Image (tube, rainbow over all chains, first blue to last red; front, side, top):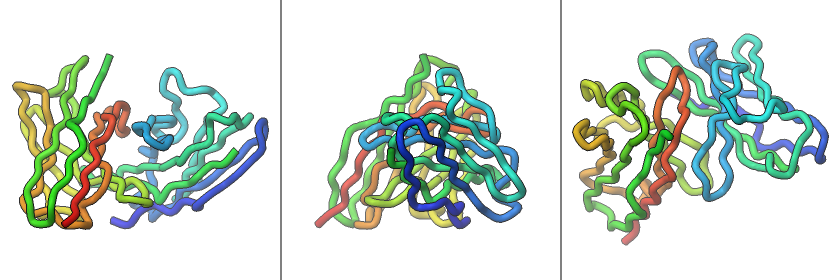
Amino acid sequence: QSALTQPRSVSGSPGQSVTFSCTGSSSDVGVFVSWYQLHPGKAPKLMIYEVNKRPSGVPDRFSGSKSGNTASLTISGLQAEDEADYYCCSYAGRYIYVFGSGTQVTV
Amino acid sequence: EVQLVQSGAEVRKPGESLMISCKGSGYTFAGYWIAWVRQMPGKGLEWMGIIYPGDSDTRYSPSLQGHVTISVDKSTSTAYLQWSSLKASDTAMYYCARQGTWNYDSWGQGTLVTVSS
């Protein structure tokens, strides 16, 4: 199972918005796409699940969407603490999951 | 509060065996799949496999099956990741995570495994 494809890095100024993608085959990127934030030295944190749902406590400036085989994460109103690596993850069938290659967000 | 607490960092030589652990608390451990995810140095997250503590049903990533063993002790709410013969390429940070509904909603703090001669 190959990793889902994400851009290596994106950057934006405080207050701006950034959007980045997660692309796979039709069997990879379904409706069960989630996104994780990873700060150095800390455990990953669930930010978005089932394409566009936010867990309790995640700011509403984080939003997700999907079109075809591509899921996207948008961070609106960038803040310094949003600087981190972000990974998408999708259920690929037969109990198997696959992560994306990761996107480094620089603020 | 849901918590997953992993065992501490390990240093081993190639060819040695190793078992690391992940202890869950704050929820019904037997009712949720537990996944293992690795991050090799400078690389991204990689899904390794999952186990259902209720019946020990286990699934592995096709690329890793046969090299690692995932197990669980339901009585102590602990999941394990085990190697019988480590390689230098097993050097990585390993995370356990609770699988919620099609996502990983709680994570352990990570266990750093270093394999070096």
